[in-house]
Length: 250
Image (cartoon, rainbow, N blue to C red; front, side, top):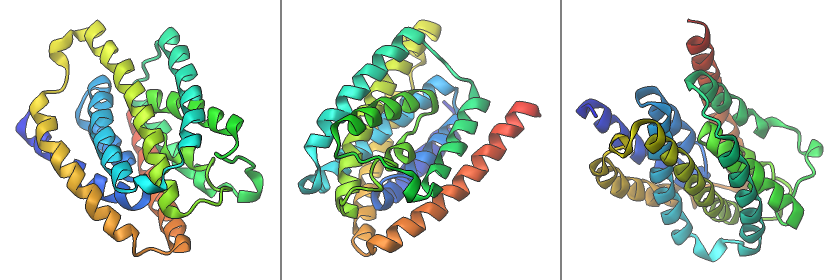
C-alpha cells in the first residue's frame, strides 16, 4: 500500500471517529467513501469494518451504562438471518453501486416521523432492524442511517441512542468483515488482506477521536443533535450520489 494512501486512511480514521463519537454515525459514512476511493471494494470493506468495530467498541465502553441490551438481543437474531442469506447469495457490488447506495441511505433521516411507525424497543422491529442493517452493511459498508429509522419513535436519550447503536454496528461490521474477508481469500488469496501495521496506527487514533467526540456530545441538546446530524449526512449523501453517477457514466 502506498505511504500516502496509508497516511490518508490513518488521518481519516481519527476525524471520522471524532464525528461518530458525537453523532453515532456520519464518521463511518465518510470513512467508507474515502476507503472505497483509494482501495478495491473488498479491502475497503474489511478495513472499514475493523476501524469501525474499534471506534464503536470504545464508544460503547464509554457509554456502557446507557446500552439497552434487550434491543441488542433481538437485533442479533435478525443480523444472523441476514448473514445466512447473504453468504448464500455471495453478492459483490462494484464501486459505482456502492457509492450510489452510500449516497441514498442518508436521506432516510428526512422521512416525516408520522410516516414511520418503527420502534427498536419492539421485538419484531428490532429483529427487522438487525436483518436490514446487517444486509446493508454487507453491500454498502454502512447501516447507521438505516438503523436510525428504528430509533426515531423511541423515548431513548441521545446517549442511549449512540450507545445502543454502537453495539448494533459492532455486530454489522463483524459480519461484514467475515463476508468480505472470505471474498478476499477466495478471489485474491490471504496475502491481499490490508496490512496489519495500518490497523496498528489507525486504531489508537480512532479510539482517541471517539473519546473527543464523546466530550462534544455532552454539550449538545437533544434537539440540536438531530438537526445538525440531518444536515451533515445529507450533504455527504449528495456528494456520494454525484460520485456514483460519475463512476457509472464517465
